[in-house]
Image 1: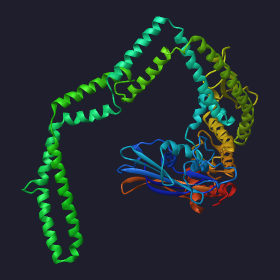
Image 2 (image 1 turned 90 degrees about the vertical axis):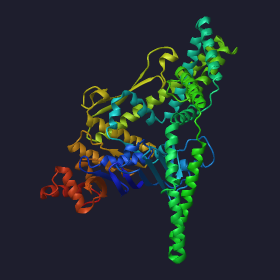
Image 3 (image 1 turned 135 degrees about the vertical axis):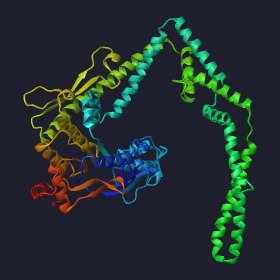
Image 4 (image 1 turned 30 degrees about the horizontal axis):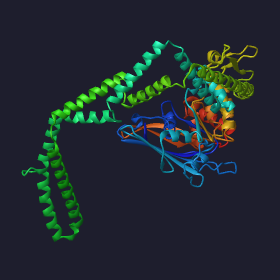
Length: 583
């Protein structure tokens, strides 16, 4: 569960600390107040990508930290503290696998982004890569972002939803690797079936490429080192002039920094001899003098070491030209890193070895392909059977939730059709033998049709909420966040959504950004996001609203009028009726 969030200099937020509670929490505020900035900061903390543009104007870095509570250890938890390839099944197992300990069931996450674009991430003070942070965060929070329901318009995403529901994501990933191996073997067979002359041309080209690259005797990172050296040699005169100017400022007898500091040091030492209270200041002057003296000596040494070598410049430029030509020839582009040339060299050697190997023969490859085709087809059938079983159950659960969300009589089904073709390669694709699409009929008596073509924005929002609801029953993520799930809905539907979220929050922490009072009144807690100008700078603040303040906020959400007694009385009545924490 998310317990607190601390944000510093992120977007419009200069400094904000927000405490969160169990149950259903609503985040509200006027349009443009920065509600989504809070979710953006949280997404950043959980491993989301962000650039220097996320830093508040005029600042050098932005930081976000959060305190999370994780479930206590149970007998079902495995010990993954030793090195193992097993995937952790919980946040606690993930931490155990990396030797990170919680503190009384609490974990602190922290992330920083700096003006240069570099970021850092920590879990309990232990630095972790962003990818690891994002993986760990999957055990803590599921964020349904603004307009994410639009992914339902992409039929390709429907398979992912079904596979996740059926718990076969890893099985499908293994199938994809198996299928890729079959495609690779078939390509190799096609190549072997080509004419001998064409094969020989390929062998000759590979040999030439390998010989040309190896003859260059490239070193990893050489291109970057040479580019830096070339830049230095090309601007030698300017560099020498600048260093000469620095040395003149340091050592000039007529007002140079070093002679002046020498005088100041002597005077300070004499003054300290007369008044011991000046001892600390004298010590600081002494330190500055020695530091300046050392700097002056270092710059003089650097100037003495500067030697213009036109022959070396020509050599460097010639070598860079060789590397450029190799990149242009064997890398995706001339601007690619030198590593791309090394990768081409490795793949060329592997291909040449395959072509020249006496063990590679057409008959053997055909046998391998036949064996792979059988495995692919059997694996695809097993996956399809699980999808068929899961689809029926999923359809019923989605319809049940949609009923509660004001879509009574709606028919929802998962359409599964087998791909056309007879051969294993034709009948299957990278994800199996099934074409999957969600179908819906929002009007009783009408046949189901493609969800992506007939559903409205409000219906898509509710279908996504239904999917998130049934997934939450199995994935056990403790916190669900909905960023403006209320798109395209209102009236009685909004009331149904609010009530549904309140029920969902009985077993989970639910956070929801909404502009609808009909949803907000069901919340156990409410946080208002407010934007204001302070000292000529736009800032965003987040604070809980309680008691009469919450009545005023609900009145504003109802009609934009938070002053009239009618609006306030209406808000008070709704809160008394629906909220567990009544105003």
